[in-house]
Length: 334
Ligand code: KG4
Ligand code: ZN
Image: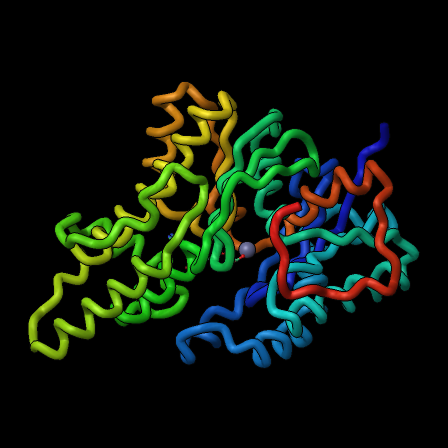
């Protein structure tokens, strides 16, 4: 079969990204333009600014991606785009940009779920072996799913309230760590000890998660100590939070490993960049002799290469979108 080159477009939040991916596994070129510094001033992503910046960035990102590649537009087989979930205005810019390219260059259009994109980031490094357990941990989602085959998902559990990434970002804010908070908390936690007694998220045997109680307890603790004029050991608090949050992920993964007998595990989403998560999940998998795949750091956070990987099985099935495609802000896996 001849090689398939997919040009993929991602703009669900504050990264404008375009990639060319060969056969769903090889990154021919990747360009990512982040708006992080702009939004850091506001302590979080400002949706209107994000969509306006995507509009300004896309043509430059396309030029950069094509410059990095030996593949020209004539050799591209399809245009893939993230259409859900994310910030509506940001998604809209990407979807319209993708439609324009597909129309002008006469290419089929493929719509991709961003969360499934995070899962397929793993295909860029290791062959996905089914059935597998996928732990999806991002700014908006915390889900544990069984993937039985390409695009065949069975959700075991999800967060009942906040996502783990949301908890990281809010804890960062109360500790005055600049946006995006996750990497800052990760670093600070590595300097501290697990000394604070914090409420455990969900003490049951279900596959569901809950992070709002843990998040609120830290916000309250910091406010109370500040009001009393007591000093907080920021590194110890970050470490205590991180240990509690990640240990719960490992505990739920362990229940799934025990109950399902599946021995292939992948981790996906921005929080999979976390150092403690990567080492603790590896220990859990080792205990059950399960194979673990975690994307390299570049593919953990938002990027278009993962969208190209997730689009490939859809290309093979000829599951193409039409020009009525509209973005959707909410979505789960599957
Ligand atoms: O997947 P992602 O880039 O965007 C969404 O699809 O939501 O994930 C972003 C989330 C943010 O909450 C960010 O703070 C978190 O991933 N994150 C981390 C780390 N790097 C990014 N959380 C913990 N430790 C990190 N090293
Ligand atoms: Zn993401």
